[in-house]
Amino acid sequence: MHIENISNHAKLRQAQRNLSEEDIAFVLRYGQEIHRTGASFFFLGVRDLPDRDARSMSRLVGSIVVVNWRGIVTVYRNSRGLRRIKRKMKYHITRQFD
Image 1 (spheres, rainbow, N blue to C red):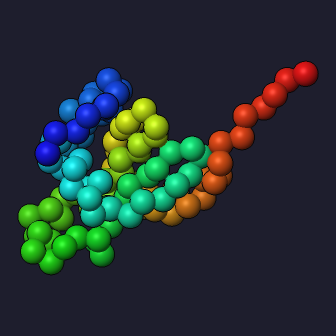
Image 2: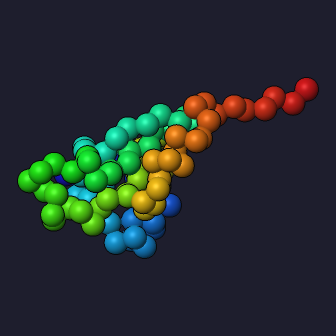
Protein backbone atom coordinates (compact mmCIF):
# COMPACT_ATOMS: atom_id res chain seq x y z
CA MET A 1 0.00 0.00 0.00
CA HIS A 2 1.41 3.37 -1.00
CA ILE A 3 0.80 6.24 1.38
CA GLU A 4 0.31 9.68 -0.14
CA ASN A 5 0.90 13.07 1.44
CA ILE A 6 3.54 12.23 4.00
CA SER A 7 5.50 15.22 5.33
CA ASN A 8 9.27 15.44 5.18
CA HIS A 9 9.33 15.41 8.97
CA ALA A 10 7.33 12.16 9.01
CA LYS A 11 9.68 10.60 6.43
CA LEU A 12 12.66 11.50 8.60
CA ARG A 13 11.03 10.09 11.75
CA GLN A 14 9.93 6.99 9.84
CA ALA A 15 13.55 6.32 8.85
CA GLN A 16 14.83 7.00 12.37
CA ARG A 17 12.32 4.58 13.88
CA ASN A 18 12.84 1.91 11.22
CA LEU A 19 9.20 1.88 10.08
CA SER A 20 8.29 0.95 6.52
CA GLU A 21 5.27 2.20 4.57
CA GLU A 22 3.65 -1.20 5.19
CA ASP A 23 4.13 -0.73 8.95
CA ILE A 24 2.48 2.69 8.83
CA ALA A 25 -0.37 1.32 6.71
CA PHE A 26 -0.85 -1.47 9.28
CA VAL A 27 -1.09 1.05 12.13
CA LEU A 28 -3.55 3.16 10.14
CA ARG A 29 -5.69 0.13 9.38
CA TYR A 30 -5.79 -1.58 12.79
CA GLY A 31 -4.90 1.17 15.26
CA GLN A 32 -7.36 3.05 17.44
CA GLU A 33 -8.24 6.47 16.04
CA ILE A 34 -8.44 9.28 18.56
CA HIS A 35 -9.24 12.87 17.51
CA ARG A 36 -7.34 15.49 19.50
CA THR A 37 -6.00 19.00 18.89
CA GLY A 38 -7.14 19.12 15.28
CA ALA A 39 -5.45 15.87 14.29
CA SER A 40 -6.15 12.14 14.29
CA PHE A 41 -3.83 9.92 16.32
CA PHE A 42 -3.71 6.26 15.31
CA PHE A 43 -2.39 4.19 18.22
CA LEU A 44 -1.64 0.47 17.88
CA GLY A 45 -2.03 -1.41 21.14
CA VAL A 46 -1.66 -5.10 21.95
CA ARG A 47 -5.41 -5.64 21.77
CA ASP A 48 -5.59 -4.07 18.33
CA LEU A 49 -3.43 -6.75 16.69
CA PRO A 50 -5.37 -9.26 14.59
CA ASP A 51 -4.82 -12.85 15.73
CA ARG A 52 -3.20 -13.91 12.47
CA ASP A 53 -0.59 -11.12 12.61
CA ALA A 54 -0.05 -10.95 16.37
CA ARG A 55 3.38 -12.52 16.42
CA SER A 56 4.89 -10.90 13.33
CA MET A 57 3.56 -7.39 14.00
CA SER A 58 4.03 -7.27 17.78
CA ARG A 59 7.08 -5.04 17.21
CA LEU A 60 4.66 -2.27 16.16
CA VAL A 61 2.84 -2.15 19.51
CA GLY A 62 3.03 1.39 20.84
CA SER A 63 3.42 2.97 17.38
CA ILE A 64 1.55 6.21 16.79
CA VAL A 65 0.81 7.90 13.46
CA VAL A 66 -0.41 11.50 13.55
CA VAL A 67 -2.57 12.60 10.60
CA ASN A 68 -4.16 15.97 9.87
CA TRP A 69 -5.96 17.36 6.83
CA ARG A 70 -2.67 17.61 4.89
CA GLY A 71 -1.62 14.00 5.45
CA ILE A 72 0.73 12.19 7.80
CA VAL A 73 2.48 14.67 10.09
CA THR A 74 4.72 12.41 12.19
CA VAL A 75 5.22 8.91 13.49
CA TYR A 76 6.61 7.86 16.85
CA ARG A 77 6.54 5.10 19.43
CA ASN A 78 5.39 5.32 23.00
CA SER A 79 4.10 2.31 24.90
CA ARG A 80 2.08 4.64 27.15
CA GLY A 81 1.01 6.79 24.22
CA LEU A 82 -2.71 6.18 24.51
CA ARG A 83 -2.74 7.70 27.98
CA ARG A 84 -0.80 10.72 26.75
CA ILE A 85 -3.06 11.24 23.73
CA LYS A 86 -6.23 11.13 25.83
CA ARG A 87 -4.86 13.88 28.08
CA LYS A 88 -4.49 16.30 25.17
CA MET A 89 -7.10 18.97 24.58
CA LYS A 90 -9.90 17.94 22.27
CA TYR A 91 -9.58 20.99 20.07
CA HIS A 92 -6.75 23.29 19.18
CA ILE A 93 -7.58 26.69 20.61
CA THR A 94 -6.05 29.61 18.80
CA ARG A 95 -5.53 32.85 20.63
CA GLN A 96 -6.74 35.99 18.96
CA PHE A 97 -4.94 39.13 19.94
CA ASP A 98 -6.78 42.42 19.97
